[in-house]
Image (cartoon, rainbow, N blue to C red; front, side, top):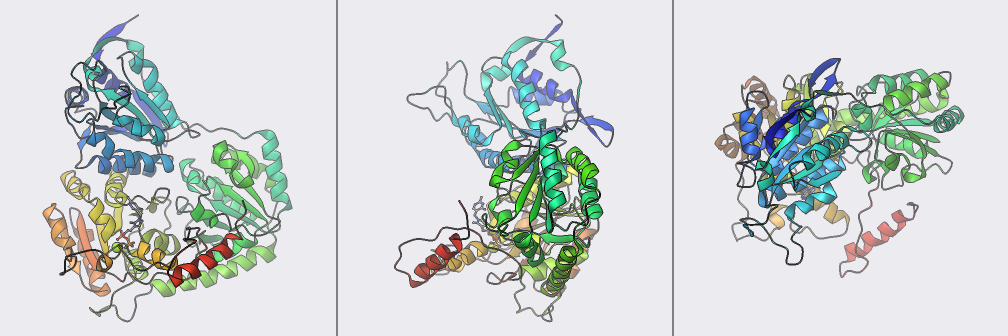
Length: 620
Ligand SMILES: Cc1ncc(C[n+]2csc(CCOP(=O)(O)OP(=O)(O)O)c2C)c(N)n1
Ligand SMILES: [Mg+2]
């Protein structure tokens, strides 16, 4: 057997370099490079191996491990899971900083290869710096925290274990039925150990998007369900994007004239102004989509996890005679909510389905009815996003919807909007308009504060020709902003708009809706010294990180600032003060958030009464 003597770290990097994928008919490297922050746990092993190949396999230095791993996740999401990045950290705090991002990737089913350094496998120098030590279990390290947030986890305790483990890790990330983060914990000594690796371990491998075909019986059941439907509704999830099934979904909708709605991850699959697109569905949904979902007798859910925001905590599909048909590559998702499952890849499954139901036509009474509802909704969106008469008034605090209107109208057709947490995901899901399938990138499986800026960076890396606009609340900005410096360093320009409502406004609203007093969310309600919380100067902060920036004081100024931001050759941050109280009341649906059963507050008791009533709509 031909072998080559390499360290485990060198072998790992070399194997990654030999993986390829096919995008638009062209072979490209599967791995877009590695993000790395070094410490004693990885600098000598992985660090040396990455340095050796730095001209062929780029290593990117971030400023925070969570930030780099969120960027890696966004990169994979924007690439529709077809390209991946590796993330390596030292042991201890560096590794743990990545755990939140691993959770984000896990919830959103995104492939990221986590390579945290680990304590010595030989244990000879124990305890090493940053080793937490378990008194009764020396096999455990902080990296075991990755287990619940990884689809695949291994600790490479001997260099030859890599030969069997790394291909499984890659396979787990590429198989659409298991896709998610893979973690290989790498003890620092094992990274440096030499082994005679078989040359075949470094043979070029070209991966292709796998497309699982549906079971014939399940297909027949799905066809029968569609043919019987009087009031069908297609519900588009993120799986439609990952399966690259836009054409097939559009064909199903148009040929059978079935109205459709979109989850956060599915948004953008149809142009916003498609006559059958009822827009966002669920808790942050349009009035048209939600009315249709309540009345539909058949919901054809495609590529969705059916999380609570989509199903209004399992109350949305309210027609007692409804059937939920769930087309999903993973049986775990397809079987949820007592659905009629159709397990298979969206693209090929829809092709097969369409061949059988092509003659089916949605009754016009239904499609005409929902199209009329949609016109009302579109008019409502126009109204809340229109430039208000106070656009030049410096004393007027704009709503999120006002700001969205201004940005959306100035965004180019080639823009991607990035967001994740706060009040904005709901507002954007309802209000943002895009005609591009890559135009809307909101992380709402984990709603991870801090994703916005780091994720924007990953989106720009994946699609450098797009205008990447990040909208971020003051809270998320303050939680994780260090990758602004990385974006400047890498020349990856972002347009960032900070909506400063001085606190966690959406949680303050939720708190009040649950009968609570305003407490510990808006800065004015927090424990502070007498002078109160300082006003953060976001423009000065961004400037200090190397970005161009400005603070604007009204919507008209925002419009002009966006012109400067577009012209800027580097990341441009615009801060604007906004209203923490109001949010778009049009549309929406119930969300199950538990309310205390006992309280000395009248408002809590009232809220709990309402809660119990709402709960009755929710089946077990
Ligand atoms: C890491 C993380 N911590 C906490 C939360 C809970 N949370 C959701 S939104 C939010 C407040 C976000 O504040 P900001 O970004 O200013 O947006 P706003 O609510 O003001 O629109 C909090 C604390 C979260 N989603 N993620
Ligand atoms: Mg805020």
